[in-house]
Image (cartoon, rainbow, N blue to C red; front, side, top):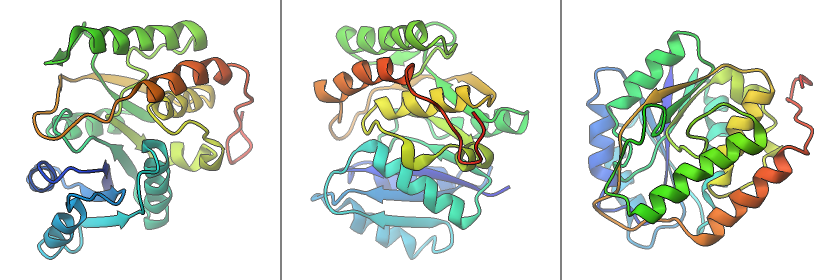
Length: 242
């Protein structure tokens, strides 16, 4: 089974080389696709230097300027489908997601899950070094999503995810509307409405040590209002399946 991990980056020079090396050291083989939004700190040049070491497994898409987390992943999803990957993963560049957990997400997918979520909240609250305000915002955001959508996913905003090829082939990627962290909610909700099996795997999320967070009030606001609109939308797959 061919597997690729998509990592969007913007100013991640402190983390990206170590992340690439770590993923390629795992006992299970994963390819990497870095999508860099014109990082002025030289993140892309670090990736290019690593490509000479891993020419078959490390891929880079460079975009001009910050275009949003959701558009980065959608670009990556379409690329991964074109390249014939069987499983596609989302992960942050800053080690807030432990790369070792990629293997656990993959194992859950092999057991039959169509979409696997690395969940901070399935066994309590597994978050390290977050301010209380941000933790409460994240936890209750997922509670809000469950209340509005009735989707029984404990960590709806999670960005550590494994998609089977079948999910990404079925979802109409061009119809995805939210661009920030609401994108994570919309993708899970769409997969759930289309009847795919979602499984949550408990992970520990650790706040970044290097670099700066990309969270903002605008990103949160888009997710808050976007969830209300989700319930009103018709969900149709590219194959015509509702």
